[in-house]
Amino acid sequence: MSGAAGAADLRIGVLRLDVDPRYDADMAYARIELRPTGDVEAAVRMALSDMKIVTDARGLDVVLSSASVSRTELDGAAQAMVADGVTHLVLDLPAEDIDHLAAALADTPVTLLNTTAPDDWLRRKCHPNLLHTASSDRMSVDALIQHAVANNWKSFLVLRGKTERDALRADAFVEAVARFRLRVVDDRTFDLSTNPAMREQNNISLLTGGTRDYDAVFIADEVGEFARYVPYQTARSRPVVGATGLVPLEWHWAFERYGAPQVNSRFESQSEGGRRMGWQDWSAWIATRAVLTSHAKARGDTLEDVNAFLRSERLRLDGSKGAQMSFRPWNGQLRMPILLATHNAVIGVAPLDGFEHRVNSLDSLGYDEGEFACD
Image (cartoon, rainbow, N blue to C red; front, side, top):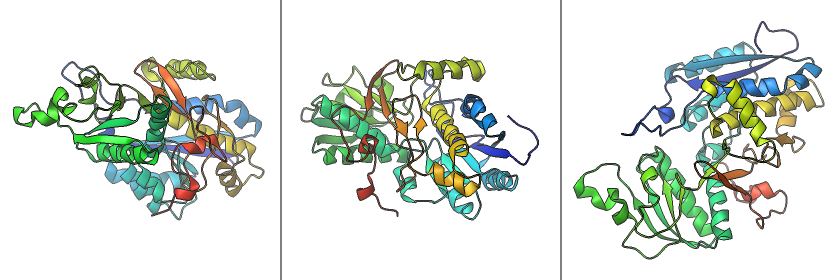
């Protein structure tokens, strides 16, 4: 899928950090990998392979450019790709870097696709050249709340870590609880230390006790080191959701419906070391499929025609999750089902039965048009 550019070339780029703070190879004492690893380029290449019949039929030669650079090199690498003819750039970057690049490339003919940053504030920036295939924080917590309502969970204990990402996810959950007229009985911060003087924050039994009763525990823990110890150690025997227990995800290797096993099998056979497809991989895979589908089905051959189709309701994207997906015009977010999964099983798929929307049931997850505003 690479070579010298020709008249009918479609150039797609992949850009990521060579040292991404989100994917540090942090290991626990037992050498348990806590953060997701793996290069999303494997998923992009799988999408190119999946869609080869379609692109061949349109006479398109797909050229993939890829770069893994330091933060100081991001601008230069992106500009070089655009200068080389890349029109769609798949980004595996933190939100602040995507925000910067979207502004820096505003006057260039490139569409950026955010595949791994869930931050709602990035959607509210409303960059006209930016689309999102990673689910937002709001979509994730809405999926959890739908499950809570379906199971008659009415009250929650919220546990949050001390990172900025922990605060954003926890705040989103607290807001979702209020929207559905449920209740947070307490909102507590945990600490990773073993300092006895901080036992009220690092002792799980103390952290989850001494308050009014609750139906479930929600935990926001970006790193995952604290969260993995919470189930089965809470002061009350209650389910745990959020960063562990029941987790909202774009994708899970155990999903068994809508052709998902075939997608997972293809990825395992094509990825280095036969690793399982993670949510970041699915997000990059579907972003690439969206671009290729738009090139194949747009009514005209110009880049403007392709991008208009990409952002239109005419896009019907199959992500092997049982729904036809498209991008929301008000914030560039991909509408999608959210999987509710444990470590080895998918328990449900949101939107759940009974959660309807006047236009599209997928819009019951995330900011709806009437409540969304650009910053």
